[in-house]
Image (cartoon, rainbow, N blue to C red; front, side):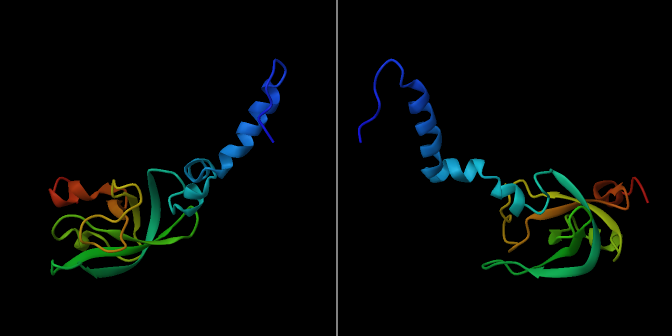
Amino acid sequence: MPKPRGIRSARKLRVQHRQQRWNDQDYKKAHFGVHIKADPLGGASHAKGIVLEKLGIESKQPNSAVRKGVRVQLIKNGKKVAAFVPRDGCLNYIDENDEVLISGFGRSGHSKGDIPGVRFKVVKTAGVSLNALFREIKE
């Protein structure tokens, strides 16, 4: 069936175009809202959570190291995620059952560098910045 043409066919063309856009995979991915459902932070930049356990995450080849991380259960939705603890010795400032603030790694939901499966990092613990604790500005 050919496209409707003519002076009074604008509505039909517009409706048809709107319906057919959903067959475009890129459009569907951008507008369906699945990425917000799948995102543990729910579209937010940061989220608070409770530390369940401390982890040692082995780095990918060719590197050989144990990256320090924590398993966090988010307060807002109860999802459990692994978060990287940046800087040398900062894991000592974090205890189990502490409230921490986590944020993304800055790679839009992808893991960073040689740390497999870790998409988040710890920013604050017990309301105090990890950076301030590391630089001994706060206790």
